[in-house]
Image 1: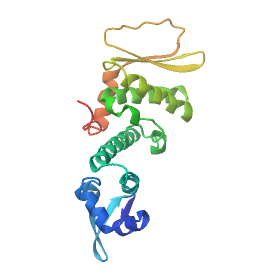
Image 2: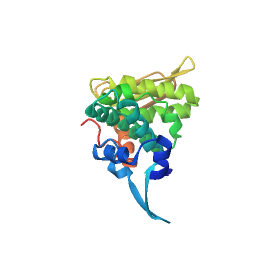
Image 3: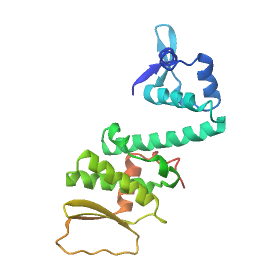
Image 4: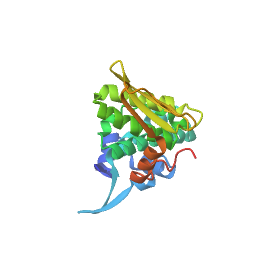
Length: 211
């Protein structure tokens, strides 16, 4: 993980020592981001660079127009989105920049683990299909929007090709599927299998999500 020292953080963001530690007390910057390490001067505090710099800039942008509680809620949502994107990057091995393009924020309150199991499955099926990056992220983004809006978690996932274009289909447990042999790229899977893979590879990813 790329880190930044406290001195460099204050210099880069233009905030004061007092602001930094006040925001820590107000739970705007997580205490676990303050990591003390030995240095030639005795001891220095370091932070995860990207997360902390982005967090400070977000607080600066919000502090004059939002209440403290409103800022906390906004940062909580932003933090959840970051954690989910980082988890997907870790699970899939895809570059973080790829998942940064996934539009998660509008669906945060609706996202359940099953949604990201579906994302994982569609992503891998799309890779095997040979989709380029732009088409793949569009298909995955559509997965998030459609599956998050379903009244109950899907039980089966289908990936297929028609007219040279890939498509996905998610259905409930009581909807058996059958198709003719001419449907290209047809794949059928249980969402529960993908969900177990997500939990096994990154068990903490959904610990703060909706029950």
